[in-house]
Image (cartoon, rainbow, N blue to C red; front, side, top):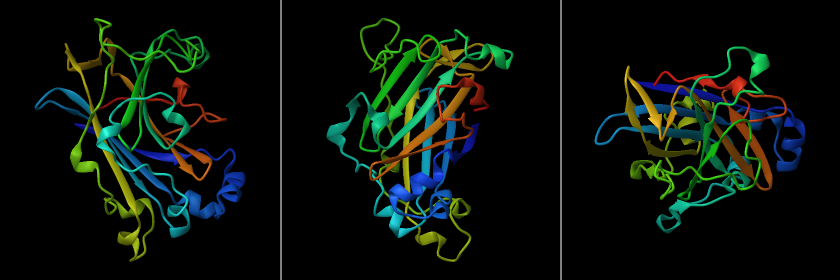
Length: 241
């Protein structure tokens, strides 16, 4: 079972972003991102996240900050959200009504991954709590070791688009640069076909991406708060993977 999300760009500052990058608004709107979340049982039980990104024009590609893969970079690193960053938020049950979302005390997990191999997993007790930067790392339940991710070697090369409808319907679609990264996070098996990351049930999920073009950051998610706020659980999706 897998679940695919089409991410859209936050448009609060769209015109200013286009001007800062030096491209048209239409070019930015044509950036395509899909994320697939999948429960994989073999060889070990894990949540697999695959990020597909298409950049529609040479002018955008020239300004796109996509860190090259470096095996020596694999490891925990803070502040990845200041660069191009592949993210995902995970939690268990959410509040039953919108008024309670801001007050919801459910803990949640934030996953950050750089295309170059660095990563970080953080645990929050409630909305942006604790508020210290960097956030508290997510540890195994014995508190001795940080939880990490596992990169899939097959996704470490630039590739052709898997879905050309992400970018354009023209005959040139197959020539549009596309980028992919895939990684996994080990899970625990629970009763009734439920799964948990450490002690957090994977019940709601919010895959999202920050893309840097020169010094300008663009924010992508299935749905957005205004201004963009990936931590706002009102916009997260029920996990069906």
